[in-house]
Length: 315
Image (cartoon, rainbow, N blue to C red; front, top):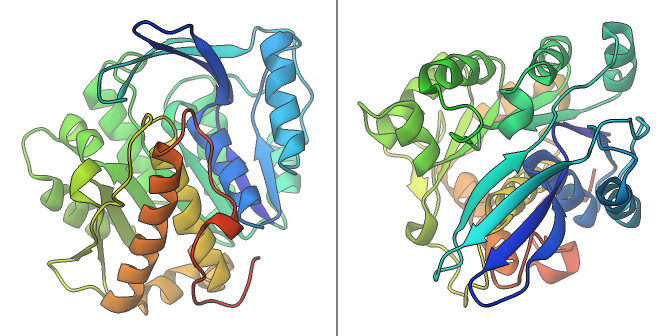
């Protein structure tokens, strides 16, 4: 079982000269759907309301085979107003509530059989839900692969010092961290992206991956050497960038699950990955992100849309 905890919302995407389009989204929810489309058993711990947008969220999760142990609540479903520029890049304005009314005992029950726990974005930083996420990490990190994508949203968490403190608390508990170069420069403007990645590796992460847009992803681990490894970005016609990072994250985690890099042995397994194997992980994830940016909205690929890779099958 793979578990994702975080926000679900509806992206209302606007482009000059076109009618707005509503897409179900939210970074953690996109990762959960992406993992399910890649053939994994996934549960998603999040919230949405008993309204039309909430019904869209619940329907989207059900259509993609994602298990949802929580019912809709009485609060409005969160909404992100995404405005696209001429290159398809999105600028977001959010109206959201991130709360998760669940007891520590229920968290323990839900995470008991999970081999991977992914967290990130708004869900890992905005209270009151962020405290529940932190509790989940503290309970799961001894028996599950922990992954984290800060996916910073300065319009929601404008205090970079607070965001930095929260991010680094999670990095210390995480095995795999994926962040954009923009994330790292906002969190640590006084040092290079590479230096921040090295600092996060020293803090406890076993694999740090930095996505760099058209430059392609770069990764650093104990097995890559101090210079890390990189691959080029997929060459595709870009419809928009909505969901690209989440598609990359889902494919990266899927590759690790296919290699049985999960559970209590995840840290030592990651340490044994060589530069060539990390390069393969990046290449697969970059192809997945390329599929997503080639079509409008966060339409993450299925396993059949991606090239075959090494590993022992879906987990």
